[in-house]
Length: 609
View 1: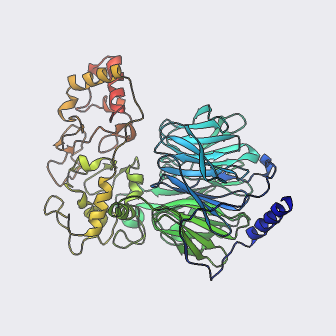
View 2 (view 1 turned 180 degrees about the horizontal axis):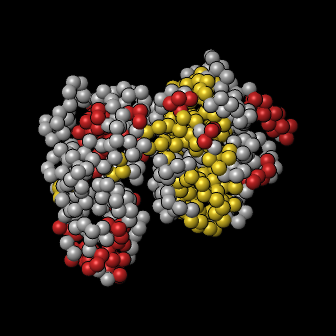
View 3 (view 1 turned 30 degrees about the vertical axis):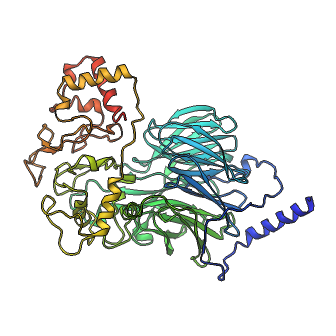
């Protein structure tokens, strides 16, 4: 028996170096479950032997024999044999899994489930969920050192450390707003944390769980939810979108820019000379999302989630050497330890693309899940996240998701909009609180046809000319536009993570009603679908095409805990500032400290149901 196991292990190790690119192989593998071959147990790797790893939507096991991908809409992960590309199992985990990482011994997978606020531990050999541990609201990134998991919890601005054997939360480390991406270098006891909206990079010492240094890649860096460490541990790579909010002469190619920022880890300086500006290094792309580095550190592979492609960049010259079209919304990319093959997770197709790094050809597309969304909603979600068609934008430049990541907002106030300065609103729950826009000028979801044409510079989903937004309806004029509207209508709000006890809720609601807030913010939607002049607009800047120039649509207060900054121009950074703003909302002077506190707690707790 031992002799047989040794022979199997020899075959697996040889096969790893020969990872097939057989042109006779079938073009697709359907989902089947088979028992994987388990090699003889190997000794636990020492920290110095563990390569830097990142929280990712897809990952290759440290021993190079397995690939695992998250399926966010299926609430599952799928494991493949990295050599034969056979599906070894699809395992249900928590709600909306976003990233995962293998344990160093390649026996378990740790998954961060954003929707359920948990991490899952999956036993690879048996394709079963071993455990699920509560983390806190909206975890995103997860890495581990074999003994503990490190998880970003974006709502409270924390990195949570959890003992893997017991699920015990060991530490909650405050790192700043919206921590998202994670990478760990166990050899140097370093943990790297990205922040979704501000482009910062925080470094923690894993031996002490203390925050070390925080550095910045620029205030305009956005959608910063991934970080990769070079194989030698010298550099950190952050795929990002640069938002040019101050641009008042707005064109499609001067609004946002796809970049990969680079930090020298030894001195933690931003390496401007090594920054990759993808529109010039390769070609125009949208939403660089994750990266993989060749084992020799000479090449970087970038998955662009909006333009549905892969940029291959030579790091010596910072020039593109290949450009590969893949599936819909590729949010993860991983490379084999020998650098021979790439795996790309196309999360809205439910497939993994397998790419030969010598020929840059897709040798196989493996179906890893059946996405359970209604077909029209899934198609609308693809359109929302896509910049790959001239119908939606010019030169793959802008998608809806560029400013409304996951249907939310980008925490930016844009100066170059036709109506004047505009703070990006969240789209979550927006179907219930029409009209859209601060100007209240979109009375149906299909009016985003005008946004596609005027903001994204696309040809549009309707043939011919679009109507005035408050005129003839756009609904029913284009199947694709109706699909997009269906997806937007599916963007519902979840209960607030800031739950408070009943007595405080009653107190805060009483203050809310006694001081006139409920006049315009009417329960249960906490909006009135009307426009009001509340003293926030400057007539010299506003060009509202409907109504008076300084009247703005009443925003819903549901989900307001996540939508700072506030007002149409983003001039209030916090709810406390809203109530001290010198506008109609300025009631703080009328309140006691306790009343102000309970009112803010009440607002932050919406929606309760």
